[in-house]
Length: 224
Image 1 (cartoon, rainbow, N blue to C red):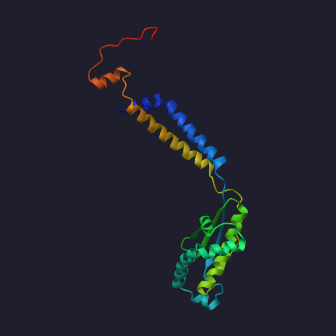
Image 2 (spheres, one colour):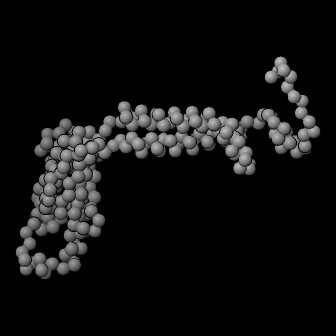
């Protein structure tokens, strides 16, 4: 097909494209606003390292020590996602959920090439997200201290209360639905056109029979 034919097909089936695109966009907006329950995110950062370092020790701290603590961050991120820490959080906050459910709400990740470990909690209630994040850092500190016999988790600040919901991202969802609606509708239109083997114009006859059209018989007034 030539470009003109593509444009002609799109113009001819424009109502289908418009209808499917509007339906997908409206459906996405309705689901994002009325169906998907909003979630809130709360973050807290802890630093992995010794709590008390004397001045002489601090001066002697070399590059290898920094690398060691950076590697320890990965170890403690696994501690934070352990079942033992989750059970401790549930017990302390008296939560009516399972450790698996709690872990599905939690994301733990090292903060670049630093000694910081970021704990992120997503929940339906912003206050619940904040409480779980704070208790997770405390439970990580106590559980890891008991397991490794060393206090290497240092708390900096408490998690803050989320001021806005983290999801759903309504505008983003609508844009994605709009794009997918256009792509799907255009694809459907070309499939319909490809499967439609009826002859409608003299151009169709010329393509089908590979002979020129000498003339056409116009419709009568009654047929029109």
